[in-house]
Length: 169
Image (cartoon, rainbow, N blue to C red):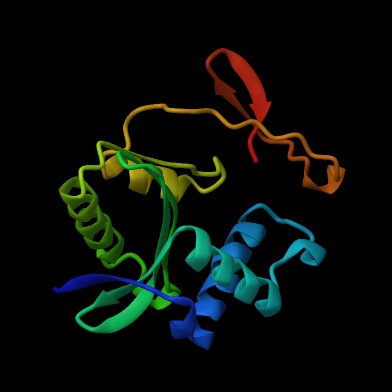
């Protein structure tokens, strides 16, 4: 299986990529049961994608020359990367592609002299949390807390973190 991670330029944007960005965001909106008024539109996704291409690394994932999703990351400096998103289209999930993509990205970053990579995962996305831990993200680097001004986002389910009970978003 040949994995390619191909950096995109603004001139290379396809409608499929805009749809992938939209699907990525709305997967999370669905997971957190966000009201529909907060779901991402294709227009917002196009603007988001253009911004990612200008300010970060937005790469299309090809497996055996077939586009299956994207990976988006930011160089914090020359030696530290924050993995923002890996998105695999639904029909390609649970087939080991994510692991192959992460292994390919790991090798690329190591070869560039990057010494560490972090990723944020919402606690409600337990499959992503397990995926990243299983793939070597085993250091608790940062805890991000959230305050909702729109109380429709408040959740009832809680989790214990370092001796504190907080809502699981």
